[in-house]
Image 1: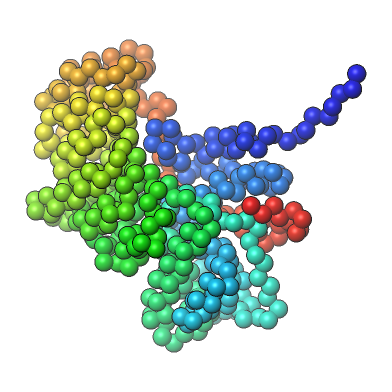
Image 2: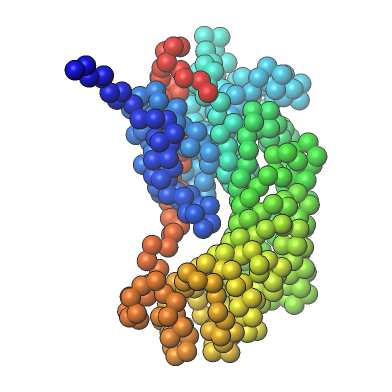
Length: 436
């Protein structure tokens, strides 16, 4: 009897599903969590097949939450993208006074350096320098874009560029270069076939609607890049109606909305009203919102909840995490979401019996469950009984907790740790490049 030798390789589709499971995507909200991505780092070194499957997943979300600890990682992402520019892209920038070729072999060190150290340690402008093309079509893999992080990364990368170009008018160069590089990258994403699914916006300023980098969201040139977005996350000052209007013009197919850390210097009723109207406009142009999360909202909750009324028939998942419900009306809007599968209430305050009464009296669909963390809400006896009845845990109040709820771990692990960068620098011979 002849036995055929079994292939040691898993089918690529199966392997990809395993890798996607490793990065822990939450089905309810389409979130991937930062800490879990580290499990894919070793996979790119196993063999060519594993590398070709892992790299697109890793580079689907290259810009994470961008703390100072990992800011150099985001700069390396910019460096890799710039290496993907074709001759036409480079010529366009050169005609604007920006010679990116002078920095493409630049080694972005993770340590603090003076300008003299940077110039000394990098062989800028050397005729012997060889710029190797990237092994993969990295821009094509982009799916989740942290808009604020890419802007900050470009600012840092352009600072290094200004050092190399030894510009005396550095401020003028930086301001011009940042916009040009940013727009060139957006064109690169379009040209290389990126399909954005998620957009994250954490603007520093109160209303960035006049910022050229943010107004790019509504330019016709980039329409095909931003229009397909399914997940939107934003946070910042309540006074961001201009940005919300920009988003309403461009994004009409959002399915997952996450609002985080809203704040204002003064509790101004007029500004809150403007914010509510702008948010309502953004919600009204969406065709089918299926999940909504409100996180770390210490005020203005009463301005946000009414807009959910626009999507009560389609919403399946709602999460309130560290939300202050002070001043809110009875939560009739939640009772109207009769197709809801999951309601999560995590460490929220100032809920009272009058507010939760409409929820308690509502008959939700079969399979509905509530997940609760926090003692304050359990002081409401009727609410406690309702939670126990609708919890998937044992009918014991001590067991009611978040359980297997998807928790966000913002560890800010960048996909471009040295293991990936070194793979580009030292990696495969020409016949092992496995270009995609």
